[in-house]
Image (tube, rainbow, N blue to C red):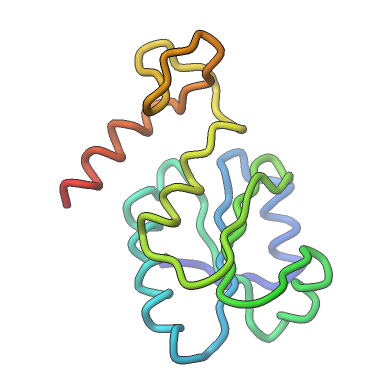
Length: 138
């Protein structure tokens, strides 16, 4: 189950978590149920590789100020306390998977290069391409 975090809990999570953190910022609106289903699917599929949480909507104004969130739904990806990317708007599982697969936080994996790249300067995503293939088959 996805944790809903307050601003102080989120700050602690960002300071302590060694895995990338995907944070969903959702409000109770007509899109909420669909977006919650999507983020729950991502959390269930990738719980070993990523920490997934929801930002408590009661603190939206504080989260908006602190993390420059312009609207909801929004999804922010952090690694070692630093924001790496974000997605704003209605997201399906593929949209969220795309932001999870950025390689700005990945270690080099010599076994499998990043999708569609053959350059020696590519920073592959370790073990994620296999996960992508199995997720895509579902």
